[in-house]
Image (cartoon, rainbow, N blue to C red):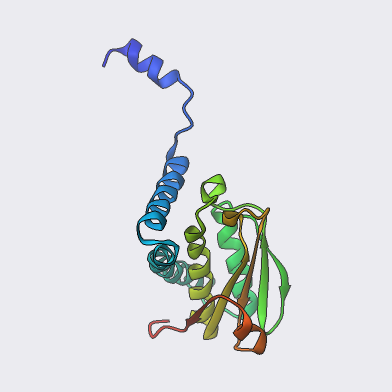
Length: 179
């Protein structure tokens, strides 16, 4: 390629860099899955990836904090911190011995999450896996999501089986053997 052509190509303003490329890739993969196999099955596939990532992230935090298990307070702080590190804006609305309620103003997938609710399984599975592997149990309810058009997200992580958690629509997680 001649230098003139290379210079002109390099100078054009194209919204393409690694972060946008990877978010678009995940959006298109989840959209294709949603169209081909349906939302429930697409969510299942993404759940597997989220669980694997949750296990890795959990181990990274436990190693860095030099603990064998995170306390409920550490779990909440870790979940907020990991989202902040990937450019989300999660925060704790409420925390007690039965549940942690999170709000979120910015999705790590940014605008790429719109109309892709299957992508929310990453949050559900990462949160559920980390919580259950440290505290024994979790049920994650995605009450509101940016993916489904809400201004922000509201995610409830139940720490115990209660009447409220049993009534909630969500996914349950249990401590794994390797936790």
